[in-house]
Amino acid sequence: MHSTETAALKVLGDIVRALDSGDLALLTLLDLSAAFDTVYHDTLLQRLEPSYGLSGCVLSWFASYLNGRDVDALQAAAAQHSQDRRYLAFFRSTTTSTTSLRTFIVGNDSATPSACVRDLGIYVDSDASTRTHVSRAVSTCFAVLRQIRRVRRSVSQQVLQSL
Image 1 (cartoon, rainbow, N blue to C red):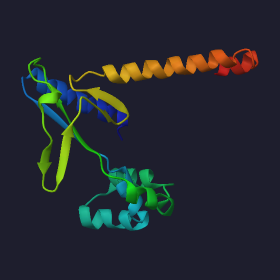
Image 2 (image 1 turned 45 degrees about the horizontal axis):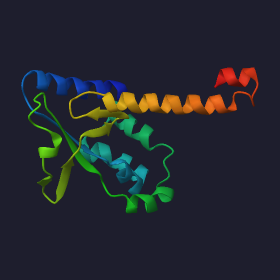
Image 3 (image 1 turned 60 degrees about the vertical axis):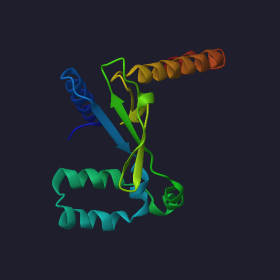
Image 4 (image 1 turned 90 degrees about the horizontal axis):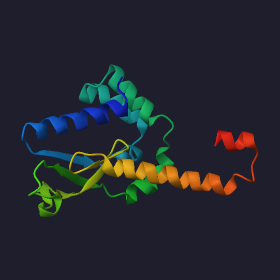
């Protein structure tokens, strides 16, 4: 099985290869996380193989993902959840920017352009960099360090080292 890190690297690698070849790359993201919270998981797992041919490690992945997710507790939140449809356009050219792109419609759904999106836990910018991801990670680290600094005199050396 592959990790989310492997999947994210594959997506970014494909985008960079397309850009290096002079192609335009679009990454469209749909937030489907709440969709799994509106169906009964046992029924879904039983139907995935006969209806869609999913078996083996793919079926195990679905079972692992759904394990421990409570349908009843999450149905109300899922009913209010609107799917977030965004796309990210990657350019090597400085003459085109995300602001010049428009919302596009496919069927009854639309997607709006973003300068940065979060995919598999990683923030990706429209220039195919992870500048926003690094900036957020650094900001989070500094915030935690400030909190540790505030409590350092109130806790033992052992607790401080574990932080």
